[in-house]
Image (cartoon, rainbow, N blue to C red):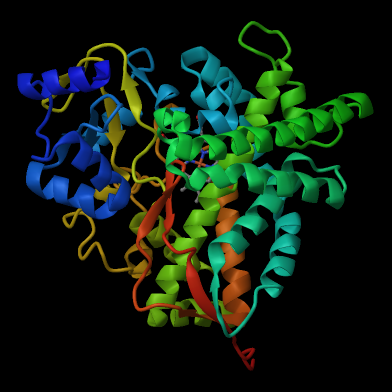
Length: 451
Ligand code: HEM
């Protein structure tokens, strides 16, 4: 039996953790994987606002839903709580020298290097690039038949982030990189990304080998693009590659090539998977709530500002946050939060999904109702789709711009109809939740409004 399972069992018996649902670890693992929203809601109903799950092969994971506890986790002392380790699931994709997986000063130094490239003002300058790519992509989406939107949105968002990172590369080179990335990232849909032990089983071994081959192909091209830029002289493009080539480590040395690669991969991944998932959810919700969609389309037709569009995006992020919980924080020194003192090894998960569905905070939480965000806007204590503290989403301004741009372009000319009787249930893709069947809808041309 693995040492983690033994520790987990011992701690369940000792009772120094919050309550846990009365299911064996295997059932808890399957529940969390197969029905993430419903299973977490069930655990909260049975155990209250703080509970622990014992996933197989992982340390116990404490879920916190109370706003004060969530704040304590997100803003916790990085010497006691390590968020880098909590992102281990995506390590094979982004590399273990990514700033996202580092701790304390190393994390901060990488984050500070990248931050300027995603400053609100710099992001605003990317509007024209974004509009151009979105317009062409949306025009190519077929009408009047059920289509899976997620892969189409992913193609669009990946194209955008690559153009922003490697601003000087010809379209053909970026298309080549795009193709290689799509092949490599297909692994994100598989269980083996979450379960390293599975990679050794005969059933999965071939899949893992193919992933390594695709990753090597991506790395070859990325290293070539980095060296091309070094030769042509960096500094003039003002894109993320320039920023990383001039970045320094905590010791003041130039950032090593391996770290540049890992940080580029981090931004490629974080910069498109999340917005893809969130947009796919937005279209699912709008398709199944036609009156909300009509109101949004009317606002666009009348050119009457963007209040309802902002409210729609806020409500989508509340209702279907792609991250069910912020990046888990690994407890590395005893820490007291709420009624418990946590000792290692434990992970703390600030559960934004349950926070966003607390009926005291959001009446009728399962209703998609953008109106709740009209006028008052979002409360920073109770609306946390971007996480918080030192891991607060670096790309949130960019994400908002991208999500709003895509919604505007689609709804200005199309109606979005449901392709099934229900909003799709969620499924995991690496560390986020996306619609289970590809975000299927039917797009129909909409007559232009008469002015
Ligand atoms: C709707 C889309 C997005 C959502 C919902 C989202 C949400 C989040 C969340 C919840 C976190 C973790 C925060 C925490 O644990 O406290 C995060 C981190 C991060 N996000 Fe986003 N994100 C989105 C889009 C983006 C985009 C477009 C980019 C880049 C262009 C980006 C870059 C990052 C990075 C780099 C981190 C890690 C920061 C760190 O390690 O310090 N995100 N995001």
